[in-house]
Length: 352
Image (cartoon, rainbow, N blue to C red; front, side):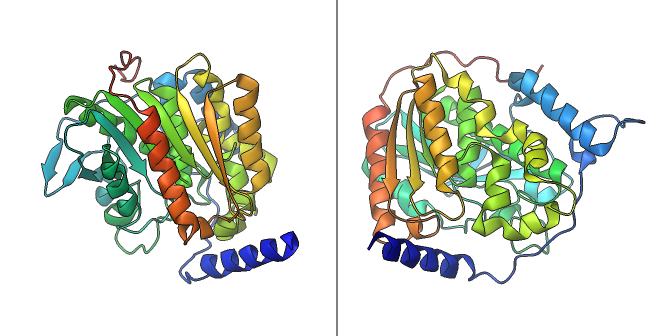
């Protein structure tokens, strides 16, 4: 019976994953111009990417620091501001976030949706958070929706076979999210949390590891290494096709260590940080073995956490009945663990 159920979920997953016919296999690029480093005359491209990762990991506080935006503006429930990490694409240089306040509360959560989320994605969840007395700032990730360059149907530039641009997009997402935390703090919110799904979960973990204002995090779909999901996942097969012409999985893992949650979990030790870790037992995009690795990391480091394991996959987690269990569990966890209290001072978040 178990095997029949698993196969049924897998068939459902494949059907949902293959609805989109606009996935494009793009050519491999090292993307050295995205790494912000002076040209090296002798070093091979891969060596330069590895050196970039090594430097980022050695000084990650500085790597993810930023100049705070000075142009926050609100209109009709939208917050907009300039990204701290500009790109050659004007559309992507404005951060868009929908703000749903809950009256009378100092608790707020930044919500980071999945890769290629549509404009309405997670808005129902934000309203559910409001019912629990939590304000929600639903942030659009780089190259998504209103931030997509002209002519693009998907957020291909956030996760792609361009190694350097993918690093840059994730770094930009971290800075954008932290700038969103700045705005919430400036509005009087003293208890801040994060809720990320899939790609948003990865970004949320990177932010949580580098910003001690965040006291609670919900990580919906979890994996240790960014590369492993892209290489083995059902939803990123077309990205792998571009990457595998030049790289193997172990080499790609080293190229993307700077944007992988596993690289920073040790920074969570000794903090009063509460996590909810959610994974699908039959996930074909975030393979269960990688989710179990995250759980092992948390247990080994004795990090405070709760686990929700759902009998579904990646796409099916967004379908009934699983989406209702997931949404209520996330909202209830945040309600119980986000307390109206003054968090510790924000440390080391800005570049000089």
